[in-house]
Length: 463
Image 1 (tube, rainbow, N blue to C red):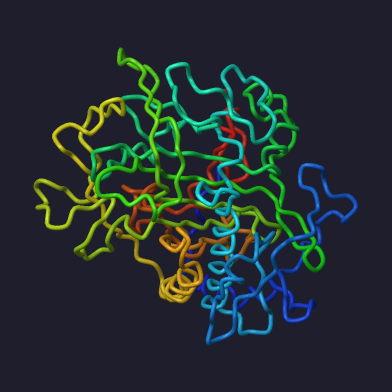
Image 2: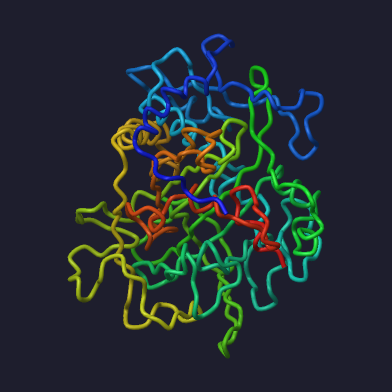
């Protein structure tokens, strides 16, 4: 099992003075990129699950005074993180490069033809990839038919049955988030619902290798290595594996749908413990999103996390409207960051006794991460004015400062902790091995057969 190595002193800070080896000076005009891994296959030998594309975004962060224009904000999906190589290499410049890349990815993946539902909604949902009895998944991008009880929604409407980002099929006694800590209830008393979706290179890798079933994973004799994103030459490269983990709330009283990325979907709860199945069609708003991207220079993946700006206040509660916090509510009636009382039954909404989650943000990020988010969030939000995307903010990007470390297989993550208030709600904080850290958690990931699964828990859902 991978474990977070003996401590990442913020000398992992000076991290990166050694990180100079990590980057190459740009050779394409004003643009540069990470050095291409020497182990990469020649262009002509690119594996079919990760084909070469010609439109990698290699836009660099603007020089100070940095101004993100609408054209920059919408310039497309990066295949890997671009870095100038002419600037001083330190945690500030590195974090800014990763966060800039995260924003470009968020915008690129959120744009869709109809301008409302995000583009990644067309990816393969985990529930239609890891099928009962290990059945062969449908072609990429197709959804399984909704349960018979679900009617009246648009064609292809997603079926949202997860009330945790860790449990594909909900139960009434356990609701994951990380560490089975409990579900999240919005101010209208409704359970937040979750989706996990994978892009085509990741889907093709899983299907080609038979990893969508327990039997297939047992037959697989190799080492799981999901395809990598990389820049090969200019804008030519490979996209690599990307996972989107989304948190959705049912839009209701007090919510303005015009400020959210939305989907119309089926909110479905299977029959469990004698409780009959239920299904209702709702408009849902995106409140949280993880974008997880494997790249050649970050084998531990890049971990970007975004939230709707109205989700929660910071450590010091503030006034205003929040999705998961009620200003002025006494602690006795609204215990802060406490899971809802059991029993948990998502078929019963609103939650009994007018309970709603009272959540504040508690993770303390290092100064470099705080400065970087403060640099890019207002610029991208301004460049995206007129779009619902202006109502989202980057919380942070976690990345490996030493991806080839001989002592820490997790790559010495920075920042050490990272938490989305909608997905790691009850494990925010700053306690090693107890508080949320994407890379230290996923470094322990295994598939259904118990083999290491390349920092992804997707394979453990195989049936």
